[in-house]
Image 1: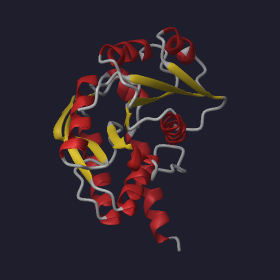
Image 2: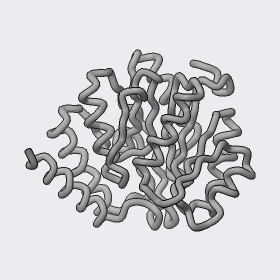
Image 3: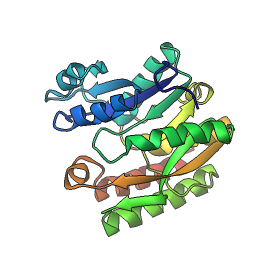
Length: 229
């Protein structure tokens, strides 16, 4: 496994109004000696200032464009800095920093270009029943439309090699990017592997993350796009 402090591994953290928790997230990532770029997606609070005080690299969108746009900005920045491995990591506290190493290990062990975290192979702590059902539905839809044999379609914890990252061009700025990136992985023909991870749902992350209604809208939007010539 590559040394996490040699500049080859970058962690991209998209953040929108996360001043309350971003400092703790960065502290955990720094403890594991990760290179970090926080993309502040037009926050109205002090997210960018807190992240900068924690010595993370901070990029700012002047307006809120959505997580897909923030990820694309961070991925392009990491590639320009010579990253050989890029990890995407949510800013709301749902992910565990200790699992980043497992994703990188999986890329190397399986000679894959994408390592996708799966809460359904691992664990989802305190996930609401309706959320679980909708996530399962999104996964089934993604399997049918992309051909990827996945167990989890909307997990923000993932890792990719440089080769894989160069094939990603996110245009769906809002939360539909999670399905878009899987479609691009399928189109690339590059190898992927799923890795069991734990998602920790808290009252804060549930309030910040996708609402059940959002997932329904995403599913309907993706279905409509499939019907459009």
